[in-house]
Length: 197
Image (cartoon, rainbow, N blue to C red):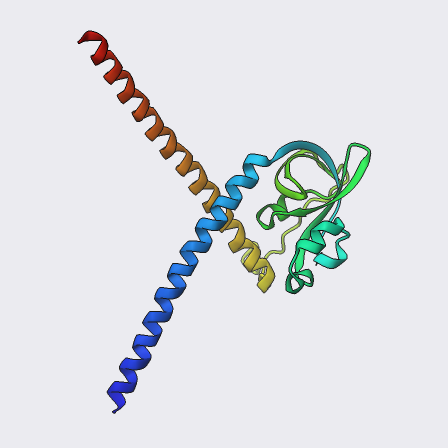
């Protein structure tokens, strides 16, 4: 009797893992497609970063249409928000979680922006009176390891996933380019064969 229950539980666990794996693959493909589309529509912009912080979506003062299109359950979720001056206008942008730490406060950046989403940043001029970071040392004179909070660990892992996603996008583009080049060469060879015949 105990073995039957064990095998039933084992079967349920295996089915659950298979379902999660399939669902995860579908979501990853969907995210990859969305990221490609977002990168394709991204526009370069030079901006002065005024402030950045995590805040609930409903408090971020985003355009009304964004709030209408966002499901209710996500409106209270905290997102990385950047307030920046683009030309004469001050705008509120949602920042990619992977680049949030790279965004300098009170610094000028060249950024890629897709709608209200900040995709990437490259620092131009940093804050002049920025204090150097002083690391605490342990008894042996080595820098102390800082304990990360749960949110910082998740952001670090998100940054790793974003880098992997970018590498996958670039890899996919190179594979597609190789296929296109091979197809073009094949067509040229066939055309040359027809001309010689």
